[in-house]
Amino acid sequence: MHSEVVASRSADQRDSPRESRNGNSPQLDAVSLAIIQQLQEDGRRPYAAIGKAVGLSEAAVRQRVQKLLDQGVMQIVAVTDPLTVGFRRQAMVGINVEGDVESIADALTGMSEVEYVVMAAGSFDILAEIVCEDDDHLLDVINKRIRALPGVRSTESFVYLKLKKQTYMWGTR
Amino acid sequence: MHSEVVASRSADQRDSPRESRNGNSPQLDAVSLAIIQQLQEDGRRPYAAIGKAVGLSEAAVRQRVQKLLDQGVMQIVAVTDPLTVGFRRQAMVGINVEGDVESIADALTGMSEVEYVVMAAGSFDILAEIVCEDDDHLLDVINKRIRALPGVRSTESFVYLKLKKQTYMWGTR
DNA sequence: CTTCAAACAACGGATTTCGACACTTGAGGG
DNA sequence: CCCTCAAGTGTCGAAATCCGTTGTTTGAAG
Image 1 (cartoon, rainbow over the protein chains, first blue to last red):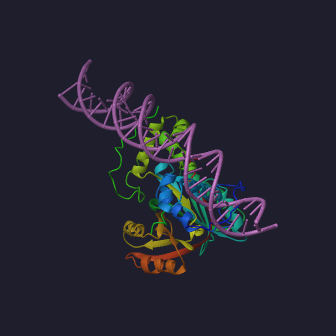
Image 2: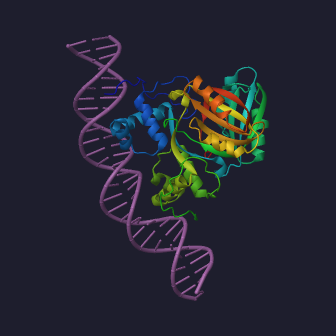
Image 3: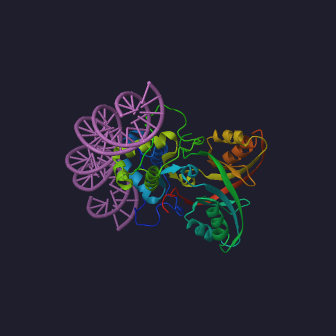
């Protein structure tokens, strides 16, 4: 009744489970999409309930979910507003680069204060979101670490005042 | 050793479980922080395992987690890179506003294509992340919907080329 | 036709979830 | 000082879930 799904010789890549799921787009089928959608609504929804919703057995759902996690296509995590959890300063930093953009992006990816890195088109080459404990920490990261990277031409910072919305529900529309 | 936390007779508030957890910062204690950290590593980790890690009973962890979810402090969800899941165009939009910034932010919050809204300091008043299916859709949202809002003075868009990092692990450092 | 690997369903035991009840502690109020 | 109330925590048992295993089917390759 439902078929295809990609080959995907499983798990031998042992690299980071949550960074840069780039390279290959595993070509998700409708069933996997439906599973992801279920888990976007509730990351703890039981496998059996998901199976009923998408027309698969509990075991099959479990296999699919495990594979999606292993492949790095999806993470199931708790998400918070850092400002409510003790991190007092947060900012988006727009960065202009001369030379290899991707190597700069990789360097940012390695910084623990940087939660989000995107290569973009427009007046910034890279957008990076930074989470810090206080002003000193933020200043340090931006001025001492990011601006110090060779190839960074300029940066512009946007300090967060208030987080108004944060969703992961593209599936529900 | 650990205390406060509310009763949480469960679920009767049916409002949005995931938008604007602003207003009150519920003042989290160290134990709740530790619980959140556990769930940032694995959103499906069993309560008993979390309890062992943070020094609490399973039931106590269950109550705390439920309360954190009810309060909107935390969500447990599946997170993906939209680009790998069929959404071909994604962008960050910087917005300048004249008049009431918050009402514009609220309007953006109501749009399903807008996944992320932040009020910021700097050369933009608001940053909004948009997820669309294709170029036409993106163009429509930016030009017809966002720019049409009364009070929006100007916008600048940064189309995403590649998502390099996306984590929620501030707890682990 | 045979072989092989992947996906799935079925099953059973271990684990987890979840509601209910009881105990402890601390803050007020009479 | 005692009482009461509220919040947090621990224990327990039944129901549900998770998870490894096994066997079947399907599709592609040899």
